[in-house]
Each structure stands twice: as C-alpha cells, then as structure tokens.
Image (cartoon, rainbow, N blue to C red; front, side, top):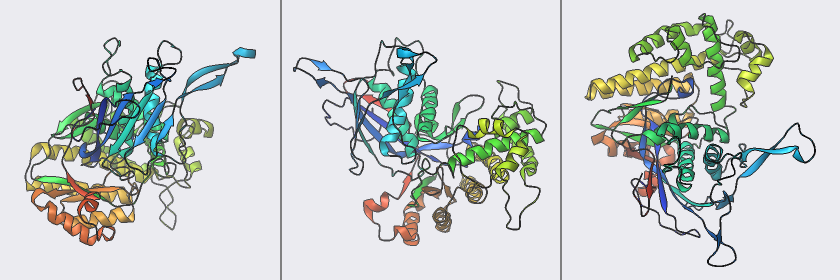
Length: 516
C-alpha cells in the first residue's frame, strides 16, 4: 500500500506486492491525556509517515514446482540499519482444563513473545499481528491459517518523539497483516471491515506492548483527512468530523531530543495517569451523588454525562457538554486532600484512595489495579482531574474558534489555548519535562502564536502554531537558541524540526491492482 511517497520495490525471497502508508499524528489543539477519559480530541496526521512493503512468501521444499507455506511465519526487515532483521511466528498458548490424562492441555489462543520490560522495534509489529490472528484466525476453526509474510519497513519519524510512531507502527502492521491475508477485500466475509473496526483492533493491539491508550493516536492514523484536523469523539461511540484549520499558518514540530518510551516507563507515567483518572472519576461521581456499580470503571466523560442527565445511548450536544465541563470544574475540589502537607503535596496514598472510593481493598484492586502495573507513593487525583476537565473544555473552544474565524485574532486565540494546555500538562498532569518546557518557551519567544508538547509527553516533540510567512525565520531562531540544535544544518536539522500541514491517514496500494 502507498499514499504519497516512494513505492518500495524489493525482493525478500519473493516480490513485495503491496505497500502501506501510515501518516504520523500530532495534536494541534489541547488534547493531551483525555482520550482515555473518553473526551473528544482534535488531532491531525502530519506529512511524515511509516511505509511497509509486504508480500506472501512461498518457500520451496523438494522441487521448483512445489511450495510449502509455513503458517504465520513473519520476516521483518527495516531500512534503518540499527533495527536488525527479525523472524518470528505465532505459537499456541495452552491452558489447563479440568480434564485428566492426555486431554488435560488444550489450545486457548495465539501467543507472540513481547517483552514489555525491554521493547524492541518488532514488538509493535507483533502487537499489530495479535488482533488479526485472534479475530480472523480463531484456533477453534482449523479451516484457514495465516500465511507466511515478508515485511519491509521504513519511515521518516524518530521513535519516542511524541509523534505517535508507536501507534502508527501498530496500525500499519495490523493493516499489513490484514492486507496480505486478503482480509481487506474479502467479499465473502459476513461483516466488512470499517475504519472504526481498524481503530478498535489497533487500540487493543497496542495494549499488548503495555500501554493502555485511549484511541486518539490510532484514530488519527486511520481516519485523518489531508484538508483538515479531526474532532474525534469516543462516547457513546467512535465518531470523527472534519475541522477546518485557519489559513495563513502552519504547525512546526520540534523534537526535544529527549526520547520518551511510554511503554517502558508506563507504570510510573502513562498507565499511572490512566489509573489516577479512573479512580478520580469514581470518587467524584460518588461525591456528586451519581450511582456507580461496584465493579464499573466509570470515566470522567461519563461522570459529566450523568451529571448533565445524559441517557444511555444518547450524546450531549456540544453546548451541553461545554456547560457540563464548566459546571463540574467547580466540583473537583472534593478530590483535594483535606490536609495538605508542608511540602504542598496534593496527592493521596493508596490507602487513602481506596477509602475515598468506598470500595474494599480487594474490589478496588480487581477493578483498578489487577490489569495494569503502576508505581507511586501518592496518587494525584485532584491535579489530574483539574487538567482533564480544563483540557476537554479547551478542545471544544479550539474547535469552535476554527469554525468561526480564520483571521489573525483567531490564530492568537488558538495560540493562547495551546499555551494554556502546555502549562496544564507541565503543572497539573506532570507529563512534560525541562527540555520540552524550554523548547515551548523559546518557540513563543521566536514568534509562535502558541506552543505545547505533543504526544504522551515526558520528552518527544513540541508543536507550535506559526505564521506561514515566518516559518523559516522561526526555525532559524530555534536552531540558534535551543542548545541541542546548534551546529545542525540541512537534512540533520530537518530531521529534528520541520513544518507540516494536515495529511491523510492510512491507505493501501496493491501492485498490479487498484488501490483500496
């Protein structure tokens, strides 16, 4: 598959007959860490991408006229030489039944070895494979097996840069395995795969590498349109609408050069924030008199909905959601600890958090901790809630500004929202870092309307809204003022800071056939 870029032609023991294109993603509005709270987000795909060439592999056995396919075997190569060739195949995960003797062990599901403690590049390829295996090749049905496949990867974005390279890798890999196994154009299938289905599969797949993401990155990689940003809502169902961006400006991505591997640090950073927001939602709901089932993991978006009288299956209007956010921000004080320590600690211990939830220790662990590994002495329920509600409100304000105007005043309003988001990410959600803070400050000093981190944070990239006619001067000033950039020129500089416009999402190109 391919959309924009150079079609890869290379033999890996067989012709690579399809090319994949996945654009990377940035959040141009305030959208950080609110997707897993089920609030709407406003991302856009960027022009840098990941490309995969893929083809089925035929392996000769006893003669040139006979071939044998090894079920599910994968060989993955990467044009970046630091990533070595990898070969793997799915195994069968046994489980023990109540039977005895020879029938004691039976097959339960597919298994691919992914070490979440020390992730490698192929871990994301394996993660993409999982959903395809489980959904399209159930072990209970032996009539069809996954075919062996060769994959060749390349891309134009550094790993850990905050531009959703991990989500793009998982989405691209998922799509590659679907394409090469003929599942994208299978007219005999009872249900045709939709973009929403692909997003859901990719979200579940990325959890295999230990990250409980909310779906924004995957949705942007799949659904994005080249002419606009996307307002993506997750509740009560996945939905995306185009949002036009003001003319006369572009986004400039700048890499802090602090590598952020959200999977490796998840227990202290990303996954910890997921648990804090979920536990905070339950405690806030109880304080507001909202009924929550004992084992329900209610989200902040659902709290706002029930607070505003939203019925099951219904969706609040944008105006009603904005009113609910404005009202509920005043209620967040119930999450502030009654006694603040001398050092200003606003977090609570795990024992305090469990007591506030009204659950027993056993039930709390089952609902909030049994499925994820976290590490913390204090849980910042108050700060996380303050950020999430304010950030969700900023998304709606950003969206409305884009619809209402396209002048300098509108760009200045958008810039202020981006700056407020960065402050909130740094101080309340604590997902920034000193280098990102410095880079956003230098961006504002260089004339950006606004600048903020993009991606999960703790390093990676910033995104700045810059007047189109000032981009070159802006990049030159950042090069001269951000110490890690000094001395960089030409392609080396372009790898760490570049202007971009919204790009398209995932697409497929089949050689010798029409694209789909």
